[in-house]
Image 1 (cartoon, rainbow, N blue to C red):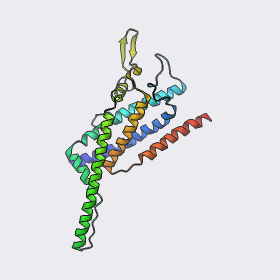
Image 2: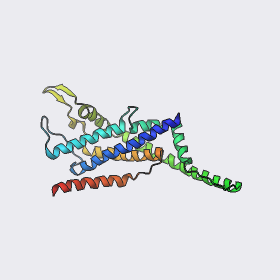
Image 3: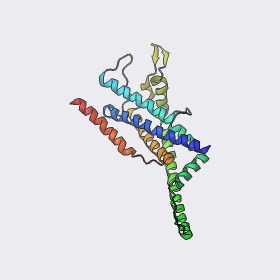
Length: 239
């Protein structure tokens, strides 16, 4: 049934929001120590060991890449990912349900037994419902635009490669020097690419929850709080 399908989508959108906030909290801790955004992905020279700040930077960076990939592009049907939610929101039946459910969710007509008043109130409610329909369609249009921009990011395939071959799994290949893992420095990913991906996911997550759950989450204020927390954390360690 469509109602059960929508309930699943709403539940997944809610969990996507919670998981994204965990990612964004970690990124708030990473930002102050990330360094030059034009630099490549933080990693030690071959066969060197991390220590101190470099180890923390690398661990947080990899954690953020792992979360970004699974929250944005995981296509397992059980995953509350943006990819799965966006796929569902291309279906006409789902779109119609989302638009109409929000359009009628606030209708409370009371005519006091007067038929003329009832008709007048019904016209007002239908006018308000049409305003809400336009608003939801605008949300869905903005959501499709934001998703298209994220999908078009050249770093998408590189982040997925990093996740598949270096973070979630370690792939080694035979080279002239022996068996070696993937050199992620050769992928051309810059630290700013992670920032761009997270910013895009921030907007997508907000819009998904607004469209599917009628949730007006204060994403901007929350991410500012995470950034402020990260800065204070590192400043406290310097005292």
